Image (cartoon, rainbow, N blue to C red; front, side, top):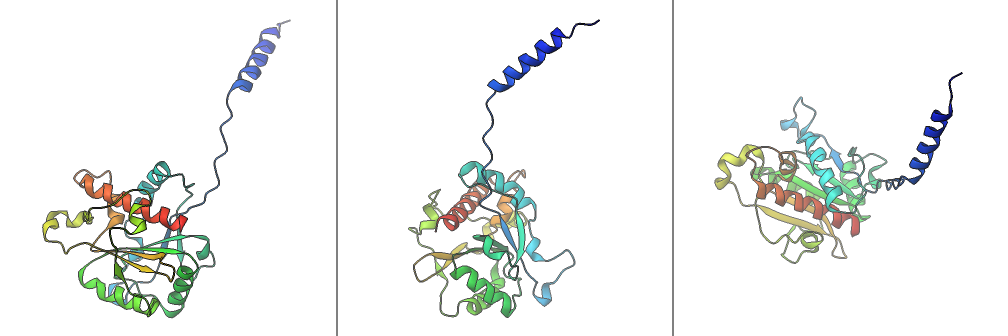
Length: 242
């Protein structure tokens, strides 16, 4: 009859060894989800690939979020895509909208977005250029007819909440790199509530999402990627703490 003593001894040894192993701490529940706004395009710009709201999707989020987790103490969850009429909109303190010179928001969406922002939400508007300003500005006038878009000053709190951003490095899309010297000047604008809180961050003549998506692309300049990541981290941290 074969002895079972060695097996019993091994089992006892493993039990003791495993008992001495440190138990990993449970992961903190997610407190932040990268929420990308879904919207309908302007009639003249509608395309078959699913809409301009998908620009840089999903690579921008996939590259950016691990770095947000690494650079901050924010417990980062899975990214989401949300319509302004979605009942879960108010679960997300930060909302990202790209190609905002091409969106076509109806009256219900405008009303929901206004409510979202006045209740403490934050909107980051990205990747619109030149003449696309007209559509964007008309939408902002409908959203807040009594509030102005103003240029951010050097002492704006958002610019210093994690990183101190004190230089205006333009962040172009990959497609503009060949003509970067002839691009229109970068502009950073904001809309504020009655208490001075930044509600809307506006990146005009900029493409921050592309700097996230192309961060590992050979030939995309490191200073532009670094600046895009700084702005993303600052925008989100500001939204989570104000």
